[in-house]
Length: 77
Image (tube, rainbow, N blue to C red; front, side, top):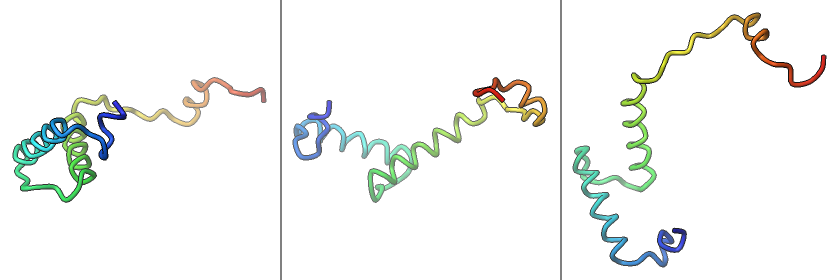
């Protein structure tokens, strides 16, 4: 995998396939183009986070006293 995805040695067909996929993703989200791979990945993770956030259970914080009682001691006191 490392050899296939090395930017200097990536096979031309694989590179073309990724470029086509990037173009399709950009179009699906109404973007003409991202300025970098980092921008594309950040955008996609933000979208993913927005979609899964409503599915995540809410966490109710326990009081400090209860939290200490529930936390096992890692070292003797």
